[in-house]
Amino acid sequence: MTLIALNKPFQMMSQFSAHPSRATLADCVDVPGVYPAGRLDADSEGLLLLTDDGALQTRIADPKHKLAKTYLAQVEGMPDDAALARLRAGVDLGDFRTLPATVRVVDTPAWLWDRDPPIRYRAAIPTTWVELQIREGKNRQVRRMTAAVGFPTLRLIRVAIGNLSLPDLGLMPGQWCETDVRTLGLPTMASHVRGAIQVPRRR
Image 1: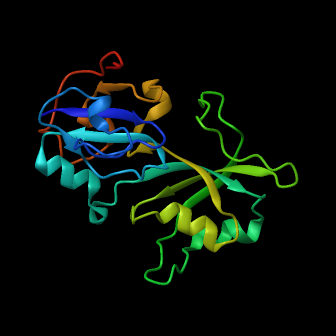
Image 2: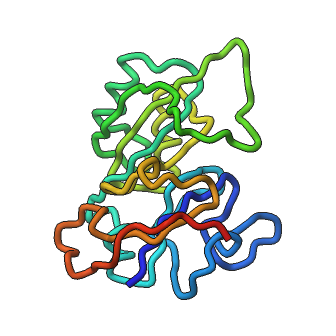
């Protein structure tokens, strides 16, 4: 069983098959037989897990297992207490209502890399970093949540899946490493064990 942690760059597709205009996972990861456990939209960045184990893929990707995913969202404006309270309580997005989320405003992380290209700068409108932890992982859920409370997301980074944290791994965009499934914090997956975290690699 192989489990790979990748820092997916902005505008990269979460697929190995060729895309006519964008980079794909094949441009970073040269390990045969692995596939994404879940996905990140092309305009989102950060932690993406890949595995060759179908049962593990399901445990990571399927929302019914409630494996927490943590995101950093750079939003337009400065969310007030009322907006944060709505996110924490769950937001009605029309087709579904989100579960309560863990949400807090944070400073710009010291470890954060620059995005290329950067977000559009607007002198009259400040931006704020918000950390959100959710468990559903619906399509574009975080972006829809912040927009629904009046603060559109300008940049979105997935920083953790379960207990596996991108800052702890020290991966820059396009880098990956093989990791131990036990770091995810899945209590019933003790049989899925592989060696310690290895040195990040870039193709």
